[in-house]
Image 1 (cartoon, rainbow, N blue to C red):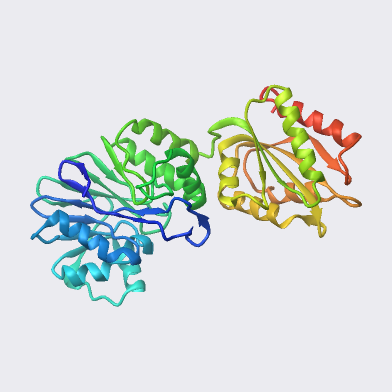
Image 2 (tube, helix red, strand yellow):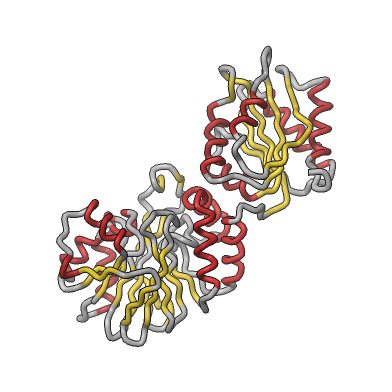
Amino acid sequence: MKNVRNDIYYVGVNDHEIDLFEGQFEVPNGMAYNSYVIMDEKIAVMDSVDIHFGEEWLQNIKEVVGERKPDYLVVQHMEPDHSANIVKFLENYPDAQIVGNAKTFQMISNFYDLELDANKVVVANNGMLSLGSHELTFVFAPMVHWPEVMVTYDSKDKVLFSADGFGKFGALDVEEAWACEARRYYFGIVGKYGAQVQALLKKAAGLDIQAICPLHGPILMENLEYYLNLYQTWSSYEAETEGVMIAYSSVYGNTKKAVKLLEEKLKECGCVRVVTADLAREDMAECIEDAFRHDRLVLASITYNGGIFPHMYTFIEGLKERGFQNRTVGLMENGSWAPTAAKTMKALLEGSKNLTWLETQVTIKSGVKGDAIAQIEALARELQPDNA
């Protein structure tokens, strides 16, 4: 098993059977369910793994602890991909104690028929547990992204066990860049809870952290400021990158043609980064990720049944659910006889904070010609950084 730091070991598993994480997010490179063992006078196991990998996980633990037996299983998060093997753990180590907070044990009783009176350690916020030389401090992180979530700081090795914070899609035996899949993971799963993430980051700022051990994705041990800064940006709903993201829905190709023309005009005006997304054909989670990543967004939709195309509606609802704000937004609509898409899209985002709406609105009446081309050129000029 991988040695994380000194006497902390990785005992997690890789899942290459999964196709959709949480039943909705595509994970072409699989998923990691992370768990850790802290070896000391007493042994603590940090979290469980998905139900399908219980035997592999227990074998991994056995390889680390040998003939010894774990004293504690710390449950930081009760989502089943991290808690599904609590029962199996106790079957193998009946004298071990389960460590969690009051909400943890309430959820355990919801999931399992377990009598834990003799196997229960209830911790308070900022409560501590001594393993010997390792002193664990439990910091509550409610709604990041479940109410019972807590993170754990090991003062000896200066490790933050971060629950689902700093997580990432992808198994650990696949090499890939961290930021893209971590960003998609964050905005897909945690993005709604920016205020709660901000609160946790403030607590973490007072700790000397030399390694971050999340429940998904790689252990972070170098250049931690980079990861912390990205989480600061994401959770404060600020743009990470200067650029324009154009999200569109097109049926017969005319709206797509208008989007391609806008992309061309933007680049002619000097806009270096332009990203386009056909909402009907691209991964919705990636589309949402790109909207949060960039500082400018253009919504382009046909008028459909007096409103907007279904995929555009899903996209905008996804932005709203995750607290989309602090962006510049432009609108393009297409309608052969009664275009209403721009009005509908703007109304859907009415409750979003700090949106700057561009004055130029592109209205296409079927084909891209005449006034529509002039409007696209004007929108491209208005989308330049000095104007947006």
